[in-house]
Image (cartoon, rainbow, N blue to C red; front, side, top):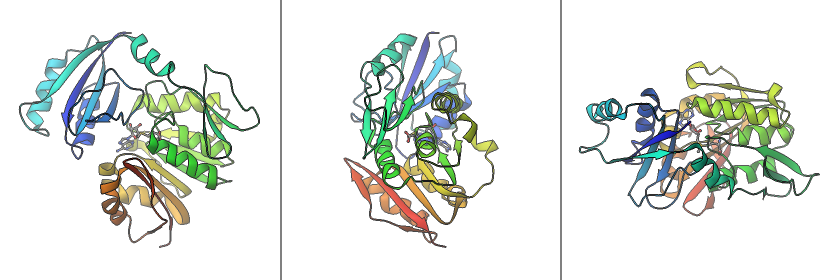
Length: 293
Ligand SMILES: C[S@@+](CC[C@H](N)C(=O)[O-])C[C@H]1O[C@@H](n2cnc3c(N)ncnc32)[C@H](O)[C@@H]1O
């Protein structure tokens, strides 16, 4: 099916709200990229634009009329007028090819490998996650995912219950399960992500242990490991919800945070979490810690 994508220039803080509005107006998937040169959400959809702040792209069925969508965005006044946006046509093959050609098996830490389903497995005895992210984020190539995977390689032994908040392709939950976790819950606002997670869980033989939910349907549960690789805005706003999933003594891993946002995000989880030293990769940080109260 051919697609059209609507890309809007947003401030970083407003990006999640713009993304929610695109979903509410019929987008099949929403991706976020920082406005400079760094795709935040994969797979990369089209060229990277040299705009400031965050670029929010909604992927729509080509038959959708975008005029009312744009009018709704203007009416909501989430972004300053005049709205800065760009519309591109996109064939299925364009977005598929772009990242399929560039996605190779990658090792994280000692023994965790992410292997695209269309390539050979380099180390059959390692812990191999077979992945086809479809339109969902999460191949391990982005630093925010990579830091979480390395954390899992070091600490992801035999957890009981895992919550993968903002599961995308399901990469983190599946990795935790293949490292010995008993059960995982995946939560995402993007239906395509939930589909991708289920398909990837099946590919990896863990579908029976991985249940997925939209935020409106999320279950109450206590987990000894909660991972949330979302942006700083939602991590702050949803601190109560995310913290509620972490059992006393359990671990919390937060990613998708720029260096300058780390203190604010930590403050939203304090008291509650006692944080380990911050892990940094490029402009990004990963926060981890234990629930101590
Ligand atoms: C950066 S991706 C992370 C994907 C994967 N967990 C990884 O580490 O690569 C963030 C995901 O969070 C989802 N997301 C964004 N805001 C959310 C919210 N408020 N509640 C649940 N999921 C959300 C997005 O749809 C996206 O799939």
